[in-house]
Length: 317
Length: 271
Image (cartoon, rainbow over all chains, first blue to last red; front, side, top):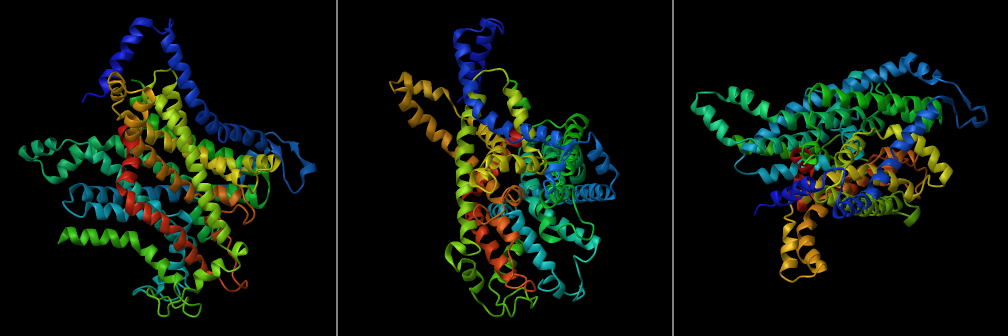
């Protein structure tokens, strides 16, 4: 069954006949229908993202504290100056980058290993796939509680394991708290990485490996010269998604430390300013800065590393 | 041998926190601090206290809220996304790439960047601490996921079968319900599972846009559980609530694992 060419040929013929300037009635009707079908979803997506982020920019140049609403006034970039000069922001930015880089790096290695095992597995693939979907599907707050209780010195089984001090206070200092937070993140999101990489592996032609074997390439060479280059598109998409996701880290830290021991992330900082202290001006400035940082990361991935964003190849035909 | 060891290791990796939560949830108050992986005395007390007092109980309302909000958000998101995905996969119109790029941008959007403005807007509009106040942001952030999944599935449907059926004498409605609907249903269903998991999982919006049990979902309710006194941490109760919200996810995974994997990777890899 040749599914795709029919539609494409039709469309190509339509374009050739009508040209972009003189759309036929049928083309016009098709476009009208398309816009009507897309409108509700587009409006719903813009309403809760574009409008609020513009509103956040407006809030961020004002002094607005909901506890003292009568004192609201325009303050220009004062909130941004306050954010960038604060010690807390620098610590939180460092924490966020640290958690992102370390957890994504570990996930990449573990996820790749898991994907290769699943790709080569002759049996038990279904079992492994079912098992790793549990961390993917589980509620992040639940996973965070599970690991928190596991390491909590008053109830956790970890401290009763050999080689670990009975009374080790995992959440009592920054390094250990980070270790547990990163463990929880890695546990939950490695499966996602593994599944995306596995799908990428499935697109590689097995014949290439056979040919390389015939030419005398060993397993390491085959991995470095065939697997990695051909996996690059899937790899970059997985890295992009996970990096941006890790950069927004909130749930695990909120459950485990609430940001104590200097473990706050930027999202926790925003939450504290906005919701706990009701300081909408300063909190919105943090929100806008976080938004710009996410844009920058996405830009670096797409332009710098040439990450083909999903859908872009297919959308043009 | 090596494969078996590997498989055992992966299952172990995935299940340890879940088994640990089940173990904790079955421990009695006296043994909850015994640090043993396997409970010594078993009790269901941690579960029953979560529902004591009916609608005033710690968990009943949040559980109903979680289920209701996730189902409503999933239904609306998948319906709207189906329209959009049909247009993108099937119709020719300018702006297709823009819609896909916009959806992708929203998928990467940091939720904390909009909770401040939403908090303020919702209070003005009377949506703060209500079901719609959570359904609307869930809808927005689930739409990109649903659209990408559905576009990938819809592109694979042999649409010319619809015309073939009509040539053979079927009415457009018959062609749609008998031919296209059965072909599209698996994709729609897959998108629905992914969106449900997304809405079920959210914490940021639930923690910021609600303030009481009238519209708090389970993840938010759990994070704000109070012990009987300020000196007793409600570890057993939190563990029991955690087990309860994990059950639907485990059932989904066991029944629909193929679909979930196909849906997760369809949008990202096939493009």
